[in-house]
Image (cartoon, rainbow, N blue to C red; front, top):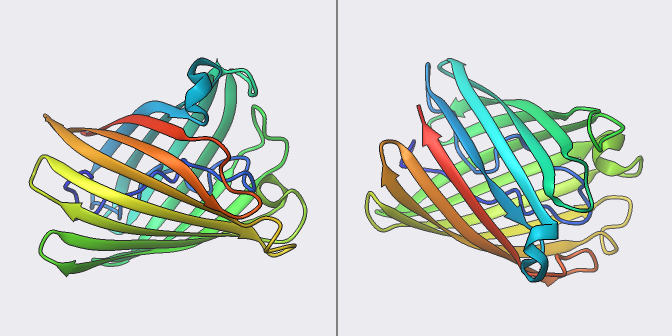
Length: 235
């Protein structure tokens, strides 16, 4: 977690098989940070730790706040280490609008580029609640619309529940629960995955996030153990 608005979050980049690309440009749960704030993320998302050099996506994200309530960003995915996708795989652009100190609305567009043939639109809400000192509960709900997300059937329904433990100004831990399905057949497309991860501050506005992802239940759950390494930097 970047100690920014006391809330960063999950590896939303652990995408279930029901979604070909992320529903959000931001791989983490972070509320809009305020006018002038800018940050970048870059790292690797591994879908199968047993075959790291053939199943890894390289991801890069940049975002900025042109107005105190608005954040805009873009996320790129590259398949240099993944045999199943193109060197340039996907682009998601979007924005967040602050609804208060602890909540925001989101809108994202997956662009027809790279491996993506059709546009997709996602709409969502995010909320962060401080349960007690050093313990936070983040939650996010998103809907995936249009063929780029739903494949032309139903609506993708995606939820994140993320307990956060802030130990000090250097270490924070997360236990991310991802629940995804499609209204066309909720049982057939159900994926429940777990993504424990940790933030390690390395100074000068930089944070290293390391995590794993595991499939828990559902026909579309993650089949192999995943791994993430992402460097986050506030500028």
